[in-house]
Length: 346
Length: 94
Image 1 (tube, each protein chain N blue to C red):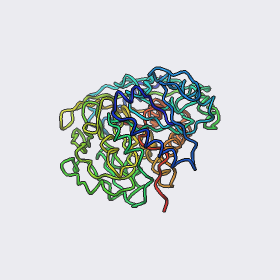
Image 2 (image 1 turned 180 degrees about the vertical axis):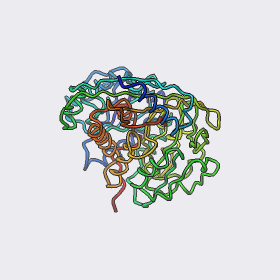
Image 3 (image 1 turned 90 degrees about the vertical axis):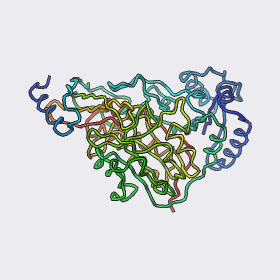
Image 4 (image 1 turned 45 degrees about the vertical axis):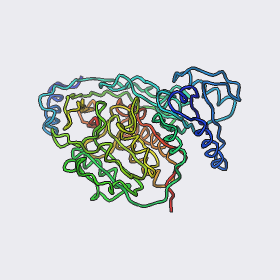
């Protein structure tokens, strides 16, 4: 497992990276039985004598490939820091929508130039401009089972969401917006769960997530609603995982990650797509497969990697090819959190 | 190119099903997926080559909406149709 960051950028964004490095030593020691771990900064001299590179996604990717030549196969990549430390790739948008680019970590996870199907497990721990935030995420432990789930869907996509939610919970418990809105979300709904699932709208103009019924788009969830939440969080909302120049005050993803009992956040960096009704496809199918693997006790990093391969395979078998929406789905979904964490099967 | 009458019928059916897109004229895009398409991905996934090229047409509906707190969202609805005029899938932006 390669743990990668940029020392100069991390020092600039956060205070006290000495505390972070101490915690990282403990993190690596705890995983020694299962993983050969190595922390490298791309921007300072290193033990492999690979020339440091500037803060550019392409240069950092080349750095990772050079490390692999000297050290050996890298199966897991953990990126420490947000876009200001290790930039997301800005990839050509396969869809004809208002996104100029697709922000993606897939190229960091890919050995070849086909970024749609990554070979490595890749996850990111955003910095939230706070070393304590990074430390908190590194210290999260694999979760014990509560066997409970929470799900919130826009009314428009109720049937489609049921198809996903039945993997993790009882369909009758799925909350629908409207009538559920952020004013009526109870903190206890998000507490003490294995899974938190959201199939709602998101916006790049607002921190909130929205339901939908016809022309009505009520606020379904605000950052302030996220209190004492717990579990593996997966959201299909557009921009659900968009964190550039954001903090846990105005990004629901970061607010979730800052909760003690939330293990990870899986979401989309840009406009996401999915069906109105079953069968599941695009974002619905990705999240469905992700939850299925997590439920089987597979580590979260491997769960997302497997889910991406599986939706690609399914889409090609169904239609004969990956269309624009399928390709964007594969690129845009990212994982925030420790990729080695899992839900215990007992 | 698919018959415009068929495309028009599909567009009307879609608007009946999703009336929030009433009044929106969809963008029509035609694509040919060649046999050697996405060969590298297929190899990675151990899936055989495409048997024959595919022609698909997509209808793309776009509408700007405002949420309850006045945030703007661009809504997209994409209908993918095969060369026989059958709908392969209907996808919404989130």
